[in-house]
Amino acid sequence: MSPGGGWRPDGPDLVVEADNAEYLPSLPDGGFTMVYIDPPFNTGRAQRRQSLTTVRSSEGDRVGFGGQRYETIKGALHRYDDAFGDYWTFLEPRLLEAWRLLSPEGTLYLHLDYREVHYAKVMLDAVFGRECFLNEIVWAYDFGARARRRWPTKHDTILVYVKDPAMYHFDSAEVDREPYMAPGLVTPEKRELGKLPTDVWWHTIVSPTGREKTGYPTQKPLGLVRRMVAASSRPGDWVLDFFAGSGTLGAAAHELGRRFVCVDSNPQAVDIMAARLPSAEIVRAEARPA
Image (cartoon, rainbow, N blue to C red):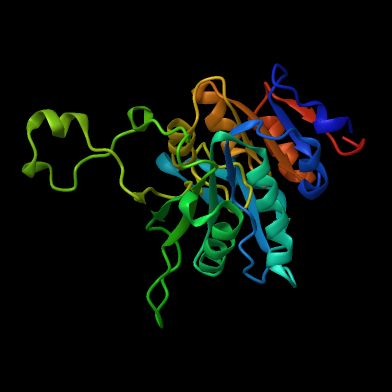
């Protein structure tokens, strides 16, 4: 693999198959305005997701609208390991690389859940400095299993840190607006415009049957990541995700006119991104059979 996987400021968008610990040091200091990472959550269990496709068939085992019969076709089973003996030895050097790769105007979004986010806050205070902490964003959703012996867990946490608190880029005018929760309390003009999001984002998960679904486990909604890209980068800026998974950052960046590098060590993830991001150049760790 060539240095930086062939990355250059005037080059193409990239999807890179690589161990991020080995790949990131080849990228230049300060090359990215935004870094979004959604690392494994250290749940201690393997995550699995099997994609299903239905096609019309007179011999199908499912009956749908109008009595039409459908056959279910099982897709590839995508899997990754979500257990590390020493999670913080794993994550800390990658956060240090994120700091190095951000420009002075840059912002890091670190997406975790309740298991590790408190420890990550302490670590990021050390890596970036407490004065560089910008926000704790709570992503709240309302889909999935319902616990009966505790309060159901229905949120993730996204920690937001900036490289330089005096220089970071943030443009609230570019962010999508939300409906007011009490529209009767505001003027018709404000109601029509909507309100800027706060640090609590109500956004559903990726629909298991929707067109956005890629079949990759833990895929994050495009609307969620698009909001971060819109606020913390400008058209033409480079953004980076080195736990890229299904490539949601790349999809958001492409939609908004940003440039992107998406890195993942899982060949299945790279295959999914290659299909989802057809304009990107694909850099493989080594030749693999088709």
